[in-house]
Image (cartoon, rainbow, N blue to C red; front, side, top):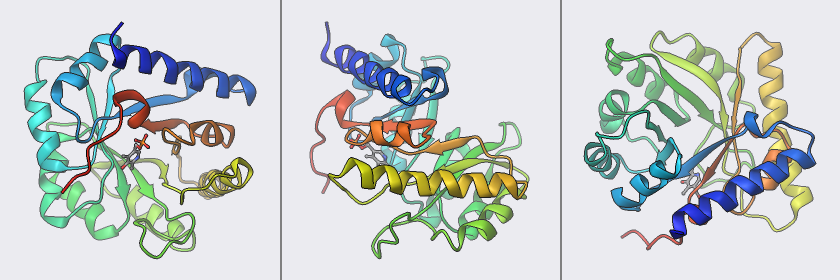
Amino acid sequence: MHKIDDNLAKVMARIQRAAQESGRAAADIHLLAVSKTQPATAVERAWQWGQRRFGENYVQEALEKKQALAHLPDIEWHFIGPIQSNKTRAIAENFDWVHSIDRLKTAQRLSAQRPSTLPALQVCVQVNIDDEETKAGVSLAELPVLAQQVAELPNLHLRGLMSIPAPCDDPRRLRATFSRLRDAMESLQQAGVPLDTLSMGMSGDLEAAIASGSTLVRVGTDIFGARAPRD
Ligand SMILES: *Cc1c(COP(=O)(O)O)cnc(C)c1O
């Protein structure tokens, strides 16, 4: 068995067990395979296994891979990296989802640049859940206003929230952090913003994220192996 097949099976088993332990249906938790820095051949291997959702952080790299894999049907491309304003057009034209909206201006550009031939761009607002100074994302205090504004943009469909918590070895603290994001989603739902996606959990913390309500885990290393450092 190929290593990527084996890894995908293991990650799916982890998702299933974590779902079961928190009394949730595994079918409610989607796996996003984060393929940044990995070659198109690795993505194709995962696709052959049955994986359909892929996450990328770097626009140019993603476009090259997407072109190389244009023969694969049903593949879904998610942009999960920081968004530079000179890249919004390429993102709007080439991705199905964007998880890293953290400014109204970026959202407005993506909406204006989304081709009318494509369905609405599915988006999440990224939240800086630990209030780390260096981290991307809006604070919980800024979230309600931005979410309302993004929800009104015509060519975007606001689906939920995304977060990358600070690394932490204590599963209880991690669960508390992830639960703050879930609570934020619930308050927005109560305020009339219809959200259904909590993009949280990665290779090292997907169990804690699922226990706190994650509906989409973003896993790179545990599927494709360690990434070479990027220069
Ligand atoms: C790279 C990345 C991931 C995957 O992280 P792993 O620890 O390799 O699973 C998930 N989310 C985002 C936003 C990333 O940039």
